[in-house]
Structure formats: C-alpha cells, structure tokens
Length: 371
Image 1 (cartoon, rainbow, N blue to C red):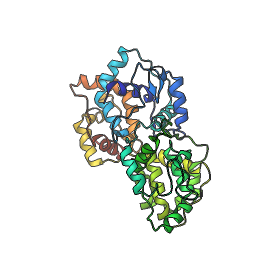
Image 2 (image 1 turned 90 degrees about the vertical axis):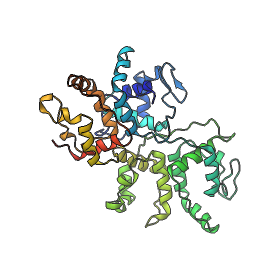
Image 3 (image 1 turned 60 degrees about the horizontal axis):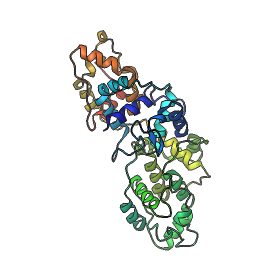
Image 4 (image 1 turned 30 degrees about the vertical axis):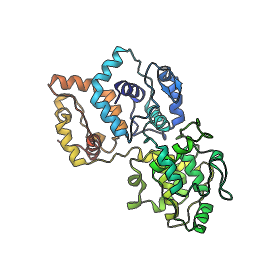
C-alpha cells in the first residue's frame, strides 16, 4: 500500500479512538472536518481538493478492510513518522468524535468498498430479473420506473430504501411471473450500480452515500419490532460484522421475504437511519481468534513491555472489550513513537502484521490480556 496514503490517513484520524464515540459516526460532519482542518488543501476526494498528496478517494483494492488498514499502518509506522516530520505536517485538531466522523466520511466515498464490475453488473441485472421490468430509458412493466428516473442510483442505501418501500408490489410482480425473489450480496449490488452508472444516460453521476441521519435508528430498530427477533443467535452484530454499508443494505433487501412477520413499513429516511445504526454497531466488531492472538501478543514483542510493569508501558487489561481496528490506529498514533523508542532501547524489532494477524490480536486484547 502507498506509504504516503497511509501518512495522510493517519494524520486525519490520529488523535482519537472510534470505539467510545459519543454519537454515531456522521460522514457529513467528517467531510466538514476534512475541509476545516485543511486536509483538502493537499488531498483530493472525488475530484475536489489539492493534488500535492494522493487522491484519498481512489479505491485501493478489493476487500481492503479497516483491519488491513491498521496492519499496514503498523507495518510502516516508522516510515510514516519520518515522512510527517520531514514535511512539517501539522496534526489536525480532531477529537474523538471527529475521528469517528472522518472514518464515516472515508466509508461514504467508498474507501473500504469492493470495486464493482460493470460486466458482472450487466449480467446480474438480467439474471436477477431487474431488466424484465426496468429498462434503462423506458419502463418494461407498468409501474416500474426506468433506471434514468431512479434518484438513488448513486447511493446503495437509498436504492435499498426504494427497493424495500416498493417490495410489496415487486413481490406481487415476481409471483405473477413465477419468479423467485432475487437475493443480493453487497458485491452484487455494487456491480449492478456500477453497470447502471456507466450507461450513457447516467454516466457522470456522483457515487457516494452518507451516514448522516436525523432519525433515531436505534429507536426505530426497536419500534419497528426488529429487536424482538434479532436477539441471541439472530443478533445482527455477528451476522453483519465486517459488512460495508452496501453489504448491509443488500442483506436487508434479501432478508425482506424471509421475515417471520410481514416486512415492516418504513417511511422516508427510516431505512437509512436503521442501516446507519446497524453499521455503527458492527463497525466496532472485528472477527478474530483470541487463541492465535495470545501467541501473537508474545511473538510480536507486545508482552515484552505491556506485561512488564518496569517498562513504563501500561497494562492492556483495562482495554478489554474496547478495541477495534480503528482504535488500534489511534493507539498507534498516540503512543507509537514512544513505543518505537522503548523497543529500540531493548533491541526489539518493530512488529509487522500480515493477513489475519491484526484481527486475531484485537480479539485477544478484547478478551483480556494476562501475564
């Protein structure tokens, strides 16, 4: 991964951990922080901003998760700190909530989204029977608006909202045609949207979504009866862990006809509020193996300092249950230089993380460290 890109992202979210944010992460506030803290002077997102630094809105690769970002930053931290000092970068004045909001903003411009494929999307648009009713410029069935009339084509959450709202009439149409309800994965939905946005009539439309909502998603989740079913083995935190906003929206679409009760009715904006609430909940989850993480805690030399009270490094037991990939980035930024100095004085190598190692370490830290 490009080191300068890591430097830029570190400078943006450095001062705070997401885990204990007082309010839900809000991409609109994050965008304002990106501008007011002068990040936009050097960095471009969706064609807006300077070009002295890398374009932070460009996709990095398929499946680039927050845990992978944390791993990459740990691996290259010494180089990052050198680059920041050399370029006299002023750390932005961003509090805990600001860090959460910036993270949401990067999500909204698809920093963590899997890239879509227009060819797959075209095939899926037909295979999932969308094209039987929805033409690109004209309707192929009564009451089915053409794609050019969709106000939600650049926003997968808004699209899922529209699909949910019209679900009853769509199910009726599917039943008349004796067609099965089409399941959609997050990647399916992304591919379809990329295909639709690359039509001559729709090309150039912005592709982003917001995590902002004026409605109480948690309250709606309870009031609509969702919480009554989604407990225990049906709890959504585990089921949605690791999914992007697009993935959550697609899951809600696929889930509609499988609900034990008739699908709930959602007014304008309520789908977004619920999806944003679910995303904020699962954003703090990282799937890892605590047993492997315990071995890593020793192998990566974490225990050499954090299990030795004479080293001056704090015990991590108090962090139990509060660690996420994003908070690991914050911990790195706040304490990393001192950690590096301490490790160098002991002749220890700076830790590097590959593959599943970072999620496993996070799982161990959340389970509670022991000497």
